[in-house]
Image (tube, rainbow over all chains, first blue to last red; front, side, top):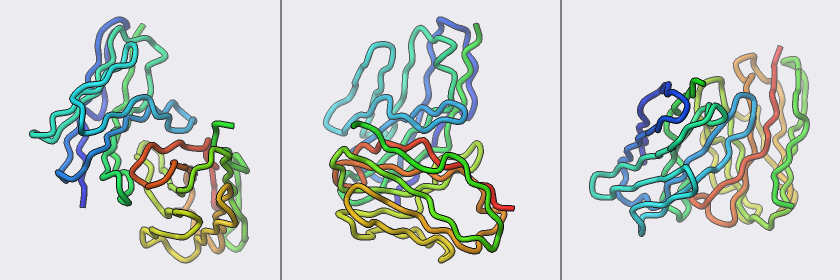
Length: 112
Length: 113
């Protein structure tokens, strides 16, 4: 089955700097890659996702890149703000009937 | 309505109690999920319902019993739980297949004494 590795487990950046979180997956059939943000005590919220037919997707300060050959995808947050502090989870699935497989999460701290 | 709702927000129960968690969505989604999340860990899939039928049971102990009365509602019945079952229980839904974008409810924080 699918296995998703996520790095780093913790990340501290200064406000205004960029943050990058990386994930690798094992199943070449996976074709859907969402990213979730979970603030303390809150629900995981879908912030961006990408499908295997594109290599990059952007939404304001957030972007995701996908390298299908290397089987890895990354989340990029530019101009970080204190409210970006949260745990971020990547996930992968074959968008048929296989459920999402989550990475272990990255705790991002943005220092003002 | 573009949200998944869950009740109760918090639940404290003894090991001999029977309780139920409830989840509701009115987005017309046909796949619904129960996850268990421990502190500092990712959500761990428990059950998947697809078109009101149980399609995935991730070897969950029988003290957890899911039910999907209709396409908008999902219940999780709890009986004879253990203290290690204390966790945040998250419900999620997606339009159709489990591999599509999932939207999570706020969760029920469960404490088993």
